[in-house]
Length: 395
Image 1 (spheres, rainbow, N blue to C red):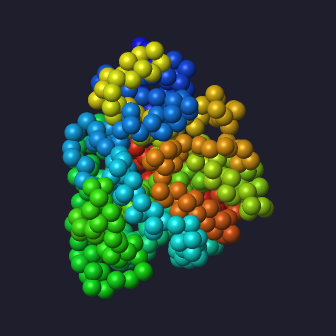
Image 2: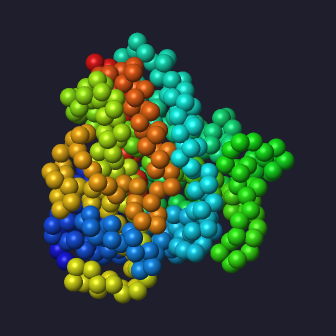
Image 3: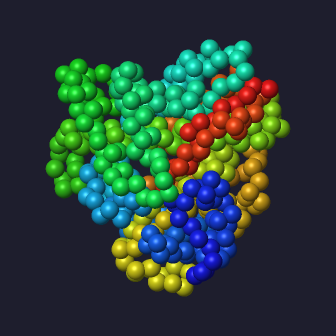
């Protein structure tokens, strides 16, 4: 292992531009060990993909966030990101019922409506914020609508998620899972919906009957549903917001490609895939090694925390030609930004739809923009990466 390259997910300087560090990891330390925080990391595409598939050897049930793994906390049932089979399969199966392709396709008009709510009043002005005016608004409204969260409470939920994830200093944040698992605000909604069901996910979860991993046929408890709703609220807000922010930044830096898209909207879906590859909104995912494993000639002890740097894998020249070049016409077989294998992102179709609609609606009103770097602010967390403010000037 290399003595010279250093990586940790809490270092703000590295997080601002991790790609030089990640390239050195791929080349010099494909299995990296951080002594300070006691974790291993894999950075090459094939390694990340292979470990993502092998859920028996590299488990998620002790957490996929480094702070959670190190805390040793008990994970509440229903946190499918932090579960392994058989309970994972049962809980994911319940959510898969409410994230069908048909249901996602049906909500596209609402996504466009939510974009129009904030973008139309800005037409004729000199700029807008890709985060404040669209990235933090439309995904929040979409997942709030799907879950059945009243509009008046959606912004407070968004603020709670941001506060729980954001790092104020370059150190692990204690209590992050306690903050994210605080779903007490949903209990009143659920009790009301038990008597007044509507067409939303919370109502559906209240009534669904299923066979759990012990073979018992039953309904979900309120606590289980709260865990589900909390998970969906977080996942449905955070990463899509970051993706929309990266869209604003990268298409500002590549105006010729932005103009190609403006003139041919059929390029949008592939542009979204290249955006996801080039700047993964969630570039770090953790596992725990279940038994001693041999990786790159080293033994990784059982119980070790192992970070999968999917953001680094997406820039691996062993898989992608000229990976540091942003190219909306690039042919991409698949990338790692939604994970891979058992824990492939359940909301990937919704995130793609939201990003596609957001870009289309922005281009309908503002075909040319430049980032206002004096006012832009990057957010720092240990797991998601992007912007807290990305104002742009209309040019």
